[in-house]
Amino acid sequence: MRTYRTVMHPTVFESKVICNKCGYEMDCEKNNYEEFMVDIIHQFKVSYGYGSDRDGDFLKFDLCENCLKWLYSTFKVPVKNSNGWDWERDNNDGE
Image 1 (cartoon, rainbow, N blue to C red):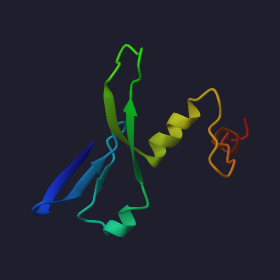
Image 2 (spheres, rainbow, N blue to C red):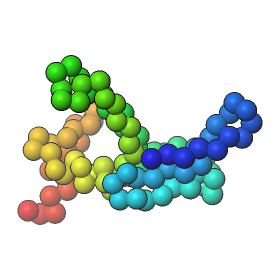
Image 3 (tube, rainbow, N blue to C red):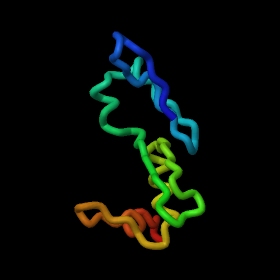
Image 4 (cartoon, helix red, strand yellow):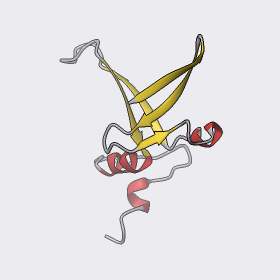
């Protein structure tokens, strides 16, 4: 969830970003905006496709790094990034 403030019409800046899962809050006004841009909290936009029971619905939510990593850990098929990094393999804590 994101809240905004208007600086000069029509310029709008994010004032706070909140992780929708755990509630972690990032106050953008107290932090350097460039520092904030490292994406400590990631925004997701999901659209349900044709044939879905939620056909035409859109979801928009934010997850912090920890909650995003938790989400990865619940996947049956390991997540890989463009460098081939396998989160599940690299974070199995010796299991």
